[in-house]
Length: 279
Image: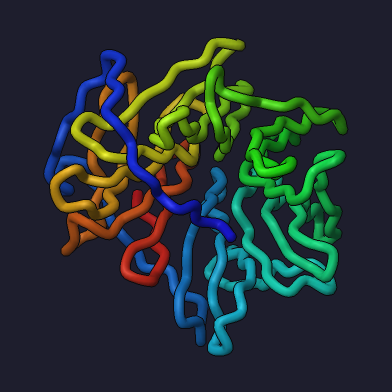
């Protein structure tokens, strides 16, 4: 399934600062996203054209992928799938995600309505999370009992593992090839990471008990969510030029996940069982 269980994270700061601003200072206007008839909707990826992908549960609690394009909702379900989650979308409109069928869990690429499975060789399960304008795809796979990250570039898989991590889960990749995601240390604590030009950087929101990084745009802005060490609730964040800014859906400070950001700074995520776009 899409959302990983948040374990616990110890504080690991590397020079970033946290700036808490009122929403008016961020100039964000929120619009709720709810697939008609759905009992829950999650918005996860967004491109420069404000095409949005994600997943929703129907009235029978079956998970489907969706695309929101020009105000209309479209299902994104590979043939014979029993559940689907659309997780990322490129500038060209190519969609990646994960689905399950009788043989297990697979990543997928949907290009002009045609689905192709993505399976890391010798893996037990594969999930594709992000795709950039060059067609590079990142995600993670299960091999034995261990989760590893991957990059799929021009048809070739490369494993991406944060040094010393027990789990590496890339969430997004931008047009420059920068990759963001989440890694877990030997004690089971979670941290965000950025892989830029072959150099790894780890980060955590100050005073958080868990940090999950999911999306990155062409300008290098990173979004994700973290668990507040005081309330134990999830709050969204934007990491821009080394500074963290909190993003909370209006009316809550403990139930916001920000999962995607486009080149114009629009962000998507979910809160209270509904998706949202804010810009």
